Length: 574
Image (tube, rainbow, N blue to C red; front, side, top):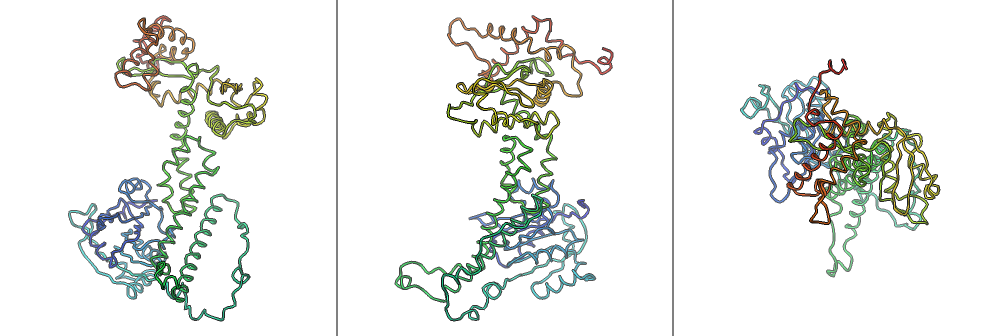
């Protein structure tokens, strides 16, 4: 649980002071481990030629959009579970006072080479009763400095005020890159006995890791193994380049042909290589999650694309078990929105390309001026074009298969099931030749016929209640139907329920009203609604409403009656 009582946003004056404590102003990449809403980052010095890259960790997920809107990457939630600190040159932090020592020690532990600035409660250092506090004091004595300050949270720029004394801590961690990573290279020198076999000694084909059964744990283990292998490769390259430098320049380089590169054995080069390699691996790892059955089994192809549009934010997160499960839980938490999106996608797929797939009714609006037509999929049959195949083909295209899978996912969802017992993809895969020859084959939710020359698939619903459920979900979402708390009149529901019966009268009236004696091509209100300018759209809407009004009046239903509401008691009374 998030303790908001421990949340004290950093005043801007203190933020500027904290950033000024950094002695190396070459900010390669900065981490803020408890970012809140980004108050501590306001003191970041400007670099006119480029923006300083800043990553944030914040446990309160509601603050993530605030940080992203300010241009910061959110890379994790719980800093104490965060491990990829070697890519940062600077860490700046204002952790909640009760965990100050723990957070600074964590930052020290994960940092490879760089500076740390932390705002702590002065009591953390003045009363070192715990092992952690004593260790932090020891680190400050050896590798840093501290300044005590009062009244820093009492000024006008303090969002929450407190008179607590603070300690502004600075630490410098210098990697022993030369000694520990490159080693004492003179000690490694010996008589040259290198041959082909000795160079390849120790190299074997990689065996699959013995991993647990969980997909998520497997993915994280493989990612961590890849990161560690990449890290070792960078260090090996640095060591090899140091040996190369000791050997000196080639004759070509001595004669001015080609530049002698001595950059590939520096700490800066190693950091850059580590970061670029790490980001590439993290991109691949999160891509694997997005494309996994853990996600794709829950989403239609359109919903998948909408999720992938947020990939830049997703891949910024640290690739940990906790973050992956949090991401998957987020999909579950947004399930209602995702399901409505999937339902509307399939509804639009069915109604977009074939005029005979749908019928219309007068949508629910508060007054006639704002009325529009609602739309329903027919319960008897609908046709989807665009799936032509040649005589030599043995199956539909990949895109056609995705379309069938999307329809199945939505209708299984409407049916309260994970997946259909007999999918449309299975029907086309197993009975493709029979379908090409004019056969009609049944799946769980439809029987289908296929006309390969025209490229049309005809769907015959086997459960009309699911079609009605889809129509109502989309109708409610697009406000064609009355809100759930509103009880519409019997006249409204009559014209909705019998829309298929009234469609012939509507189409005849629409044809009459759009006929142009002076022109060969009549006015097409449906085209104007989709593609016209504002004037054409208003005209089209008026034509459609007038045609539907006339059609309903021919069947004894009057528009004024549709706007009436009835009470729940009236409905129960019949």
